[in-house]
Length: 84
Length: 84
Image (tube, rainbow over all chains, first blue to last red; front, side):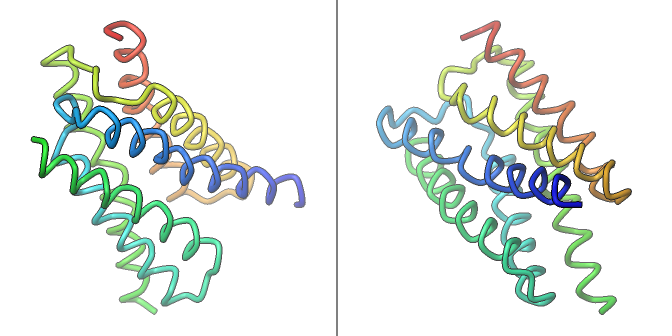
């Protein structure tokens, strides 16, 4: 099962850190025109619920991954709301 | 634990269906300028690994959520590659 756990671990890392380039690109360009506001808001809400779920079941990897993702996605949402 | 399971279920639904408005917006506008190619590609790869993980551990909700997400995100990646 170690190989399976590594796949899950790498999956969690990738679906977390992937939001950093989008946040940096948006910070740099201030261009949010092609981003869907609905997508970003619903995704942020979903990630917040994953974080609450992780806290309630006491799962550290879920808590860690969704905390980082939430910060990055909340930043993207804030820029979308500001720059339109 | 039923309430906790419902929170996890709603979280999975939201972080899956949220990609539909982005895919539809991009299909309609053909505008992908503010989307980060690195983010979309790494996210698609991470979701594919979550899908493989779900298959290996035999978890139906993980398989279902990540199958749908992968189709939507792969479509967004394809449009980003095409429209630039």
